[in-house]
Length: 86
Image (cartoon, rainbow, N blue to C red; front, top):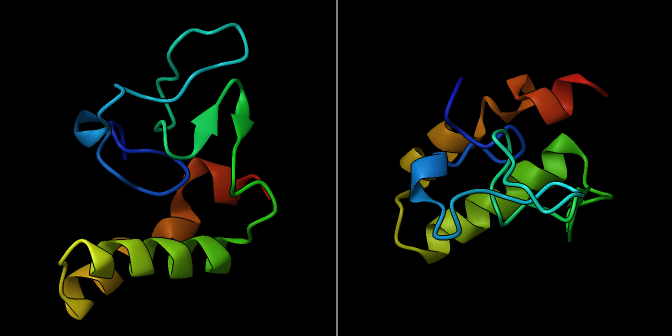
């Protein structure tokens, strides 16, 4: 599961900002810019994995992904680093 955001599963190569930022301002190799800014999970800090699945599913549907594809991309989110640590 390398090269995908370890919070939402988005391919890091699709991130328009090239990744999130660590507290020191450097680029994060693990998280996208939508999830991680200045060393913190911004906007999703209180989410459970189920909350994140629902949120990402809705975003994907809003961007034209079909229901089966959006479900497929969000169903294994619980295996990502952020969610396994809890």
